Image (cartoon, rainbow over all chains, first blue to last red; front, side, top):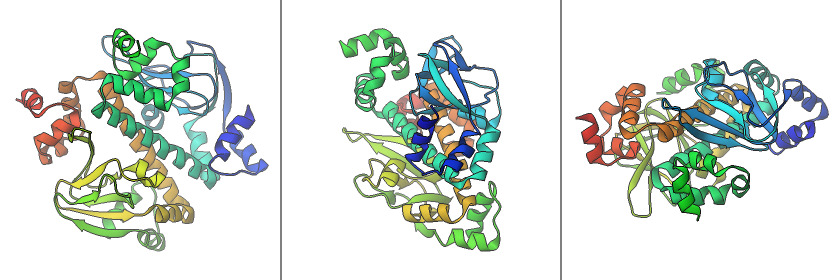
Length: 187
Length: 187
């Protein structure tokens, strides 16, 4: 459990035992069941989550009540409603468990203290933020330039494991197409 | 000129004169003309750019030669083909001047040295990366949940100055609609 977090961080920066103890002391651990909400639209957003095991969906409910998937988060991914988290506003998104999920949670205050207290962690989070930004830029390009069928192929190519684990209805919502359109694409 | 960069950084972290001198020594300055390419698809990406004055468009040319605008960058914005920059691969995007533009440029090596040499700057870039990530997340939500007319209203609300400066053809490309569709939306 702890070692998963350490292993993940050490892919970017190496830590002494003492440093990891300092890092670990800034996180809390939580187990959640399938369908539990870690972030609820309209409520405050207290944490960024690191997924140890399981699967989350970050979703936006439009005014008609339709659910749109902004992103999925599997093992080793960091997820939150980042706008609400950093600005201390209420959530416009919800974060829900698609499977039973174990996460590490960090508050904004602990995140700031951790970065200020250990430059290696500021560097680690900068690397992760840059990669997250790249991933979002790629997703924007796919919306601008690919049709639904090509977006499905793109997802299949980048995250084959995800497609095995996620119900087709959610994949359709992530791609921005109807369940029927997705069925035609993959039949 | 220098003071614009300093003022921008000091919105997040304060710097002594000596520290700013250290920061400044990692950048080069460049003036470019309207239509000049700072990044060219297929070529290496040597810099991230900070816009001092002017306006840039980051664009993707699809296989049919159609141009899609991934983002605009005005004064105080940072822009690059970040995937290519960090991974040292060739550009899949181009970055072109929409107006005569002045930028500060930083290489990957200088970026890394600057972050390692002055933790305040690592903190500054982490803040900027987080905000960039939030902006991208918001744009993904707008693609998933808004129609073209709503996306136009959203852009008008967030960046009114941009709409004054950017030709309508480029706005249409940014919104992912045809020039004719945009004309109907704003007439």
